[in-house]
Image 1 (cartoon, rainbow, N blue to C red):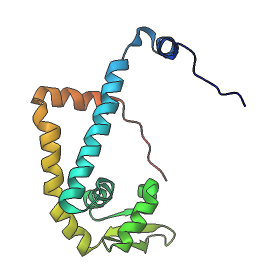
Image 2 (image 1 turned 90 degrees about the vertical axis):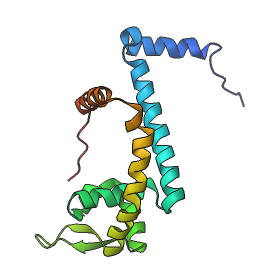
Image 3 (image 1 turned 180 degrees about the horizontal axis):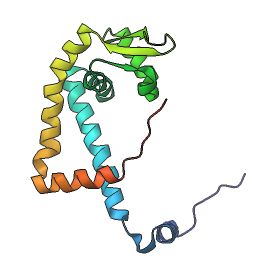
Image 4 (image 1 turned 135 degrees about the vertical axis):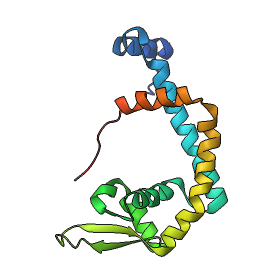
Length: 159
């Protein structure tokens, strides 16, 4: 069986493909910085939250979304987190119930234990956000970053 090896100058090929797709390579470094910042910040925030509270960042995110929405959301609004919601139900932090308005939908709601867990984890998480993100930027940089990122948010709502 013949083994496929990469072209001898894969870096040049990659550079040419980028140049063809992003004329002048406009925006490439900003995109790479965004991806690296997002990946490293989320990884560190997850590690810190897990070490300090035992809760994963993704679980915290579901609890925070529910709290921000007044304590409950339709399952369709958490569609990409079905397995995570199931684990949170098993841990007693959220509960599922049939929607009272139409009886067809499913509501996910915070339990008293979920609210208690949020009370414990919000300060820990936001200290990390402040230390790793907010404190490293001045007010003008934060405003420019927010404005720029709001321009590229893609609506991925479901249902």
